[in-house]
Length: 210
Image (cartoon, rainbow, N blue to C red; front, side, top):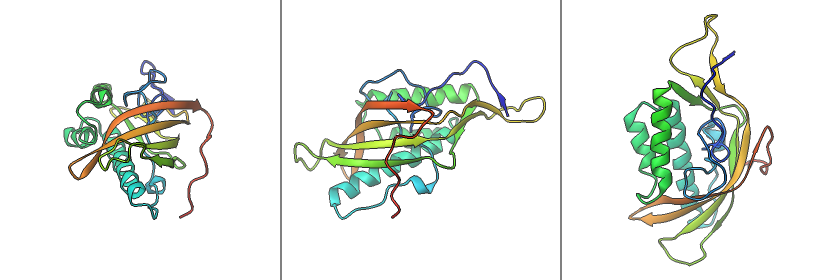
């Protein structure tokens, strides 16, 4: 397994986000708000998708987080695919600076022939959903803890010996608040605030067995 020099990507704040972090899936610039530097829910297997609850609002926000996770994973896996990138960007409000950050990130990945794939153990946990204003349209905040063991690799070429060229496979994670607002029948990501990030370990609660 060879490593490519030059592209140094850390997970979104944590990640990338990742992702979402949040490490291997996207570039970060430290703790901040605005969605571009937050830990994205990792692009992992279906086991990472959060389970429904008996709370209607939490179910709606859980669905929004799951939709974002799937769209982010699809875009990172094929960042040169305009349809997949548009599907991801459609989940942000137009005023969220993270939308343009995500567009630029995917464009950079496509230009550098970098793609991401899920690891075997990544997952995320929605620790809480809060609605401080009681408005039916939000903002509603979901606190998400993500563990990301995804891999960034060179999608264009292999090493001379035929082995895959790895860009980043360092596991990590982070804790972030995702702020959602309802526009029409859809919850969109308005802002993301990174609370904490880490590398080389998993500090998230155990995934649900449900």
